[in-house]
Image (cartoon, rainbow, N blue to C red):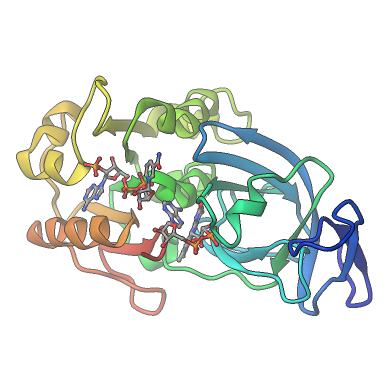
Amino acid sequence: MTASSSATVTAAPIHATDDVSAPVAFAIPDNVFAETVTEVRHYTDRLFRFRITRPTSFRFRSGEFVMIGLPNAEKPVYRAYSIASPSWDEEIEFFSIKVENGPLTEHLQKIKRGDTVLLRKKSTGTLVLDALLPGKRLYMLSTGTGVAPFASLIRDPETYEKFEEVILIQTCRDIAELKYITEMVEGIKDDPLIGEFAADSLRLYTTTTREPFTHMGRITDLMQSGKLFSDLGLPPLDPETDRGMICGSMHMIHDTKAILESFGLVEGANNKPATYVVERAFVG
Ligand SMILES: Cc1cc2nc3c(=O)[nH]c(=O)nc-3n(C[C@H](O)[C@H](O)[C@H](O)COP(=O)(O)OP(=O)(O)OC[C@H]3O[C@@H](n4cnc5c(N)ncnc54)[C@H](O)[C@@H]3O)c2cc1C
Ligand SMILES: NC(=O)c1ccc[n+]([C@@H]2O[C@H](COP(=O)([O-])OP(=O)(O)OC[C@H]3O[C@@H](n4cnc5c(N)ncnc54)[C@H](OP(=O)(O)O)[C@@H]3O)[C@@H](O)[C@H]2O)c1
């Protein structure tokens, strides 16, 4: 369903009224798509994923983000979200945090199949293959919901056309938070479109910091100690062959950038491709 400016949807009011059960209709703002939720899955009390219909005219590059909101106010709250599905997918997938009293996610976490989500019409971002120089091995380094843009890129055949090896890394506090990406990578090998590429090229390395697990510790510490590379059976980072993409909190990005740069990698952008790129997974 694509919105026109005159469309309205009914939604639960976010401000109390005398009759709290009365649905309130808000006009769909101009310049957004109004899309329908097709699937919701909760992983923990802090994480869920959802899928929405995709407008035919909405184009994006795998790894980009877009602003989303809910039709629950005259002036909806919009927040940046990495698109977790690849650019060829007929639907759009997001992997979301649930922030207590968060202006968007206190409502977004309650969405159900059939509900409406607003989508701004233009996507953007730097975690795209075009912002990297050609290389042999691509490291995708993430914490928490920072894995979302990589969920898109690991399902895009172009990633495997450009890189022989793709190493996806996610550090979370506990094992349950790793489930979204772990299940996806397990399933990818059977995917008719990308299974063949991914089976030979994609490796997932997950770590926890607050619950015992196979691999433990922050990804930054594991790179600095060299344990990441010895666990993977790979040499340390080499700017001649290796490329990096980073997505996490501001602190994680700060620390991970310093490590990549200590190995000689250089930050790139859409208009100046180089050997690594960065995007914040959230503000704060
Ligand atoms: C480029 C970009 C891409 C983003 N992509 C995603 C995404 O794919 N999935 C997603 O869940 N969020 C993503 N975010 C964060 C998102 O924009 C919102 O901040 C988040 O949905 C919470 O919205 P809110 O209004 O409920 O709370 P906000 O007022 O936005 O945030 C309140 C506080 O919650 C914490 N917080 C916010 N988002 C997160 C998060 N993702 N993980 C951990 N703590 C968080 C921060 O401490 C923040 O100060 C992205 C942010 C940016 C800048
Ligand atoms: N139940 C709850 O209420 C609850 C639970 C979790 C988070 N939160 C809040 O939610 C927000 C975000 O939490 P989050 O867990 O998604 O993100 P986070 O705090 O950034 O942690 C995600 C993962 O990244 C690691 N990490 C943190 N800083 C790093 C750095 N500089 N370099 C490398 N790795 C780093 C963390 O390790 P460490 O464990 O070593 O920090 C953790 O494993 C925080 O404000 C937090 O207080 C609340």
